[in-house]
Image (cartoon, rainbow, N blue to C red):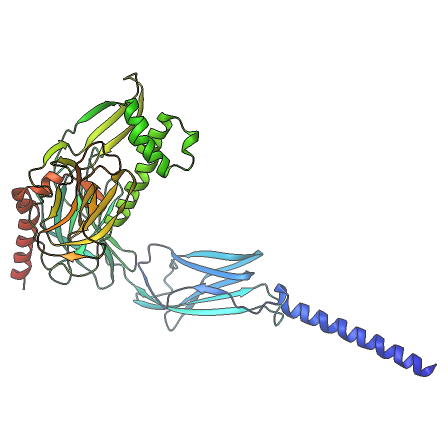
Length: 458
């Protein structure tokens, strides 16, 4: 009997031991006892202009309980943020401001210390992180000087600017426009100098542009590019939608690209093609042509574009088209025609007479079989409605070359070429890039005279 009692007691002890063991394992693996220290998002070297708040981000899986931030000049230290969270936060952001006190002298470098503790019960006090960063004080704005620029810019057209930007900690330079577009500035000829083509969209009533330079401390300088603005009036067209067009070309495109074409009326199909499909196609073009490869621009000298020998212009750039069905007062949809249409013989040869890189050669909705070439300095040319393309993405050629043939692909009623010119994603007047005098006065003379000024400055 005593032996049975001892056996029973041993079993109970074993069960208790197992339960305690399972409990320990559970607690050990429980989120309450997680062992990951908080993460502090902070660069090792920070440039601070002392005006803008300095953002500090902390994250932790179990939740942040406490954050302390201090600043030291090597001799003295002061706490500039001390945050305790009653409800632990998985993500916390503090905007640190420089202390408004005479405690610090006018030193240019400090040490920032961030301490963060989470709510984990690991080691009873939780996991902690201490991260330090060197803070370099920089309150000086970058220097900007516009060296040369095109005298004027026309609505729907392009212009050039060359400038110098200088700062020991220069982060980026760009051209900011009134309509929100930022044009990339390309390093030009010598270190510290930049050039850019800019564009005034045909749909924008006004235009202004500033050179902007920003350093790593957040100091920003701006310089207005004082172009003379030349307003242009573009064509407006009212176009009646015919049943044979809706039942033909529009029906075909809707059947290819719409998700459920059978559920759409003929006018709904037209709106889909002219609006939804068009927007997607233009977004793709904009994405492709907004890129400007890195590298120094030493020279830019291309010839006027003549893509179609003996081609006749049959549609103009900037035509604002309003479509109606039956009642002329009832506009169904609208669009902008962002190129020139040239017609010649069927399947005529399309040529490029400039150094080019093929960046796109594929179907693109309303543009049909679509070819896009890059010519440097943020400038692209576009060829739409092709029946065939004779080059491939990645191809580079310098001499005149037959690149494609005209056709009726996409939203084209007759055999023709849709020819467009694009500056960093913005469609511009092709006529300018077909005019040697305009190109000389507005691009080459600007770049070359800027070069001379840069050489004379040595």
